[in-house]
Image 1 (cartoon, rainbow, N blue to C red):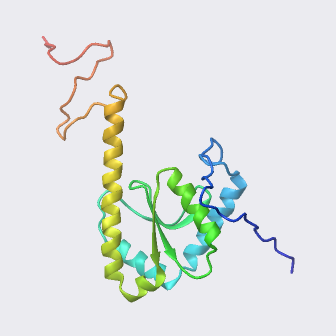
Image 2 (image 1 turned 90 degrees about the vertical axis):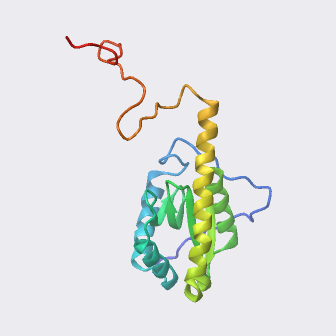
Image 3 (image 1 turned 180 degrees about the vertical axis):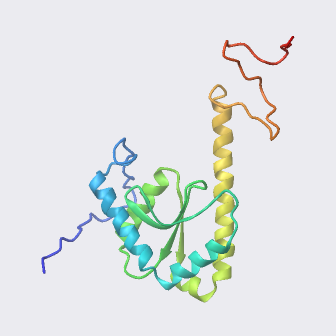
Length: 190
């Protein structure tokens, strides 16, 4: 067998900053080769999930979150998170044995730097009392949704010309221009 290389990390200090988001590797500063390796690893993790992960995934599959959904073992940047909701901006990580604290700290900082709320759930709590864990996760989901709505409201107030016109369910809203640049409203067909 060949010798495997080990990853040596600098100790994570409190003042270290998260890596910057770049225009490479689907928005993160990582290569396509590294992303492919991460996706392969996530696929393998989905095949061999822990009992705590399976129990939480079963509860999530039966729940109705409306327009929000969770992806199991999702690749977000250079990290693999246990559950990710892109619409909510929420990542759920199941804390199990064997995760190095330096890696976890760096991962959390990089996710929070791009606006993803990170929630840690101990695996023992999921297996012992999953209903209490689900109640905690529900509160976190509501807080994440409220944060997203507040950020959107602030953005729309700060940038009024960038917002799109709102239409109601019947299609009523601001007049739509016809192909000559004039509005169709108030025009008589005669």
